[in-house]
Image (cartoon, rainbow, N blue to C red; front, side):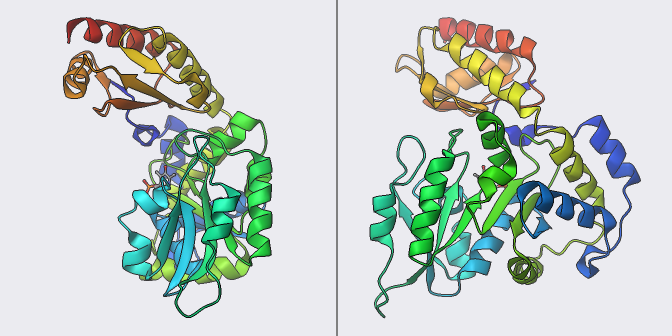
Length: 338
Ligand SMILES: *Cc1c(COP(=O)(O)O)cnc(C)c1O
């Protein structure tokens, strides 16, 4: 099966399985798990932060970050398309009593600085207190430039806002720009990173910040049910995600380019090539074809997609160079018959 729905479907590598089997473990709620401690130290070092916290998921990492930066009645600014606004069940509002202030994402994924500036609330008892600017990189497969990040940080400083990066796929952004993780992370007070997407770990995310932030974050993680015991079994895979899988993302990006170029020449599909910056390809199906019929026909050929008029195809470790031809041929034959 060629599964293009997401890079979350990646399976752990044999090296990860072996590392998991032999991992040294302890009770991480007591801080006693050597594998978790090693992963946290490694992540903090790679990203240029004082400390890091291993958490269950990207959603949990973002929620903990929001609850650590903001209190009840505070507000965070984010994109209208931000994962931590759109796709996390409203957790910040439900569990954190934190109000989101979503703003339009431009076609490059950024939020206009002027929009941010005018959404920051004055000190007045009518308003929630704006505490945090939360950005996402990559966003919809697109990379935010480091110059944009620098100016967003400057604006945040000026207004005494803290900054958070939902960096679920920040490793893709770093590889695409040929910069280090720390080069991107330097603009933020906290960053969350998914180990279980393109980096192929089975479970887990990393939350990064300074000592004080991580101390507070640890308390929220426990309260949210994220205090895990012998978590070194999964942290061992997370360590290999950071040491062995980051550079490999370049293959996924290359495959995305190949696939986008090929599919852009197929009648019945349109592809915006400028949107292909990392491991995602967005394909629009023309009105002659029914999305569900298309998805069913592809599935019959061993190709899995989410049905839709706008189809997101995600490249990852378990899709190989030879699969690109199979995917393109699959689309061609399904378009001819459906
Ligand atoms: C996947 C994702 C998350 C959430 O990660 P989960 O581990 O699925 O909870 C958060 N932000 C972004 C941008 C993501 O792509």
